[in-house]
Image (cartoon, rainbow, N blue to C red; front, side, top):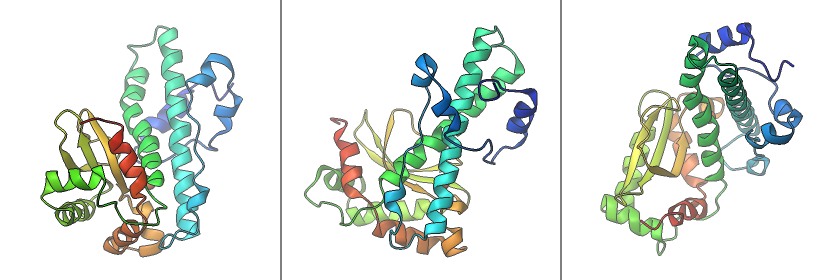
Length: 235
Ligand SMILES: [Fe+2]
């Protein structure tokens, strides 16, 4: 079955197309799985409720949803292929090694988009009496200082993510720049607020005006979702 095997041709295209999203269509494979295998596969979530959000056009969002679905598909394919190779005693093969390297990129491409879409669609500002607000003031001196730092992080040249992380061991809140999907994550960090600054996240609507996109992002932050993430930890 094409969906369960990783052919040499696919491997070549996988290792040769860094930065591109490939393997389509999404979701088909996950639905085709049964039993144990199906339980470890990821399912793309539906974020259609975000359509109509002010400052984000339908073509931009639909394009973005498709990209996200591609990451889910690829994560599943990689996990499947790696598992299969392990079973076949090919864990030292260059193919296994390269796919293993790729896993962090695809997995984070999937998961970060989920955090991003889920911290959008909000209708009100941050709760100034809540734990998140208090933590931002403790870590940055003021909410405004946090916001300046976060906007500056998201404005950096390059493609990637601006992420407010909670360092769950120290309790500190720090904004991080994540290059692409996989470089720069703090170990043991909980993503609290995630902003996509790949060009696909804004160019359809804003061209090179990233600051305008960041403005639109801020108008639509789902602060309740971000607050929920903080409460997952006691720190
Ligand atoms: Fe994206």
